[in-house]
Image (cartoon, rainbow, N blue to C red; front, side):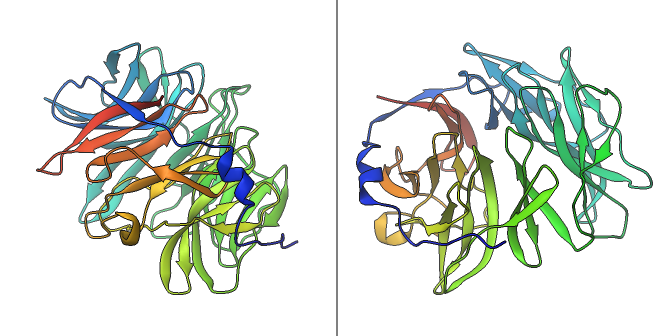
Length: 333
């Protein structure tokens, strides 16, 4: 079933999300630079930071940080999610000749990272999200094949991995996971949501091309697409209708943070050059509420919000003149 689409949300929605001043606080790091990419939604964050021994996974809580030891030689780490218990998940990769020579899904336990099992003959794995029950969702794949199999590592069955029912064999790229276990999928036919064995296609708009998802929370999705030949952010509401985010833009080539959304529909993401963004540098961020424009975010020349918690706290980085990311937290006042 293709859900309905709409271009704009009612203007009254914007008035319910008054602009505020974002107060920044620097996060401590063990070395040079870092970036939070996950939150426990209770003022704690997780991500990666540079150390004397290389890049490592890290958590921040109550003004202090904890660094996790590596789980393999010369790995790079991506922390994708954290639940309210403080368990983090992500992917550790070893790159060789521009590709992923090794890719391992991990979770944290007792101050270390442990590898999650792969499925069958699949040699690579990645973790996307963990809910408060401890269930982890991600995907596995085999060397030389581009097809991804979406899997779950259930908390009630430690050390096991299972496939999700109802997924067809066409090419599927899982994008994000909601708290209830629903999975956002990018398929040849566009974006869709898998929920309890049923797949529902997300809506589109005339002139909207190449949609992709960034974040998924409380049934709402935010991502990006090309709309009438302009790069824009896109919000899909709980009914699956698509809305172009006013004043938005994106740039995928610089690795800066993309769009994010919390359970209340508060969105952070790139703004276009007409409203102060810089497409070449990938700077200039804004805030939306349920698809309606609210305000610019922080200092649009250097502030890069990457993750917004359900408590309204935003984490990200400030980029210095050498393009080094320094981790920060912002709170609205």
